[in-house]
Image 1 (tube, rainbow, N blue to C red):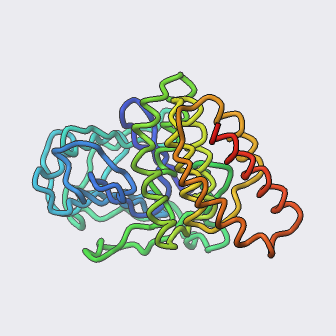
Image 2 (spheres, rainbow, N blue to C red):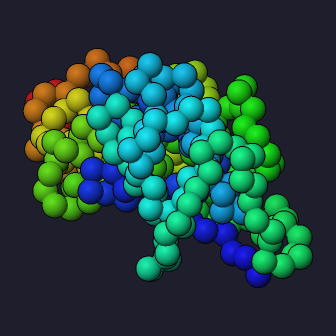
Length: 301
């Protein structure tokens, strides 16, 4: 029975886990794979991973084009494990999670020029209940989205449930563990701003994404000593109109003593919202409110 293959993109000496779905690659902060490179178009290419293990790359009409294994390609291209994709000045290598996976000797440069071979068996496609779950940033899981086989429609939208933060969080984790705080900040800046923008628009629909963003911002505040990351947490939860989790408030108490000045106006705005909602709070939420108001006093000293 053919099993789902989990793919990875090797980028800047780090592996990005890529689940089933559609991912826009480009310079724009809202791209799932955001590349900070002036040679990369805002929406440069579309990477598609199908449930059967087929991977496609589509050039979205980028000025500098898409190069695979040294050759410029047009339209839609089927990728194989080991293929090297160059977008602008950035190189990404497609790999999988199986140790020693053999490289395919050939790949199709045009969709349909060499159709996929027959399935190894006659097993039906996996049902929705059996779709693989992928571990992403933070302590939560999501169902890998399914996608119909066939040509890529030009109007197809990427799967918004798979955010840049989900893809790049692992890179930031490695940087933080090695003490490279500024590198982690550069990796996370755009994904975190994307989450904040979505929160302001009421469009955060990936489970646990906002909390993961707040956790990363708190870790960045501790690692860099910059108060702007503390501001981020309170701006985020003001936009969400939610109470900051108690464990994060505890962490912020420790962090606040180590960072430079925070924007007291941002924290004051959040505390005002808490007070306006206080009549509907339960005991645990009122306790967190009191702790946050204590942070407001601490931040004023």
